[in-house]
Image (cartoon, rainbow, N blue to C red; front, side, top):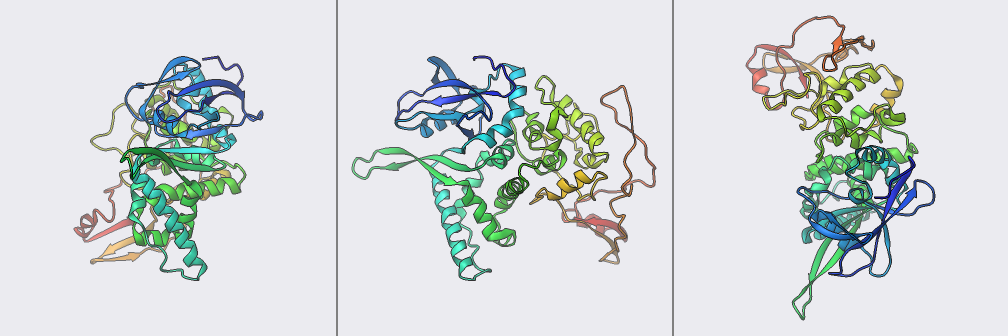
Length: 446
């Protein structure tokens, strides 16, 4: 690798033209961000295992994993060079300091790209899903134009197959898609020649806008009626966050709501559960919370929890702590383990004490994640709502916390007042029998 000498420099992959079984040949150029460089950015799943597919990079042998090899094979042009940004190749993965600096540029890189190319892999059934989504979108808009508002949500189960692709579980997808000016989804498929019986490779595509327009056309209520839960939970937050980011002209969200929203995503490197969202967050501006792959997972998670408490001046992050018998012992008891998915949905908290946090917390789409709250009492077999005086779930009534210093980074020191002890924590719908077994109980309905 030619060293990057400036903080705004990055490498562009020149994917040379080729057909079918031609060897993949590439070269690298060093460019400066926002200095007129034109390129497309690839968004894809790395996959597990060691790289074993050989390509030519500046005339030398270079190994890549299966999914990236398929993407380069299918996305190269027949006659023209294609200029791409591909993280696994354009970043020197063996240079930790370079990784740190390049990850901080990734939001800008995906924003500066002329297009983001979403690669889902080689799968004939995904191509069928593309067709189903396009047909549903066209049908929804046609019936909507005819004045039908209650009968056009006819879900095609072929589309559900695409949403099971590992790509939609990636931690990095949120940054890559939300930051982009435009994206196109690609997959590899094949067709059979009716004369020879041979199968020939083809590449199918679907504009990302078809996904977002279908979401907005059908609406969550009708989508829930047709029960494609994954569409609401996976595509909904991406659609809404992308629209809000564009309407706010780049205004950033805050880190904790992003972490809550994307907790169930997956990352090969657990540290990326934090780093993949950092540059979309106002908390990542100016290096306030730096990217550093020299730190362990426990150090990154502990630093993040303390940073969120100090910067927000509230304890909302503690709602993300979910201990279980399977919990790892490498974290302090007050630090959320973002490697683990939600076991119980978090409470919808009242706005924090800082107005700027309040605004961005409220604006972030909580589709399919947050629980709605109602304070109720259970008496003689019936539930009755309790009037909310404005202090429910806000015991501190907006007062900022008092954080004491400690020489031990694994220790959290706080001041507070003890009023009572929690007797039981339940998931209302799953543990209703626990409540019914008591003659009287106050519960939170989630």
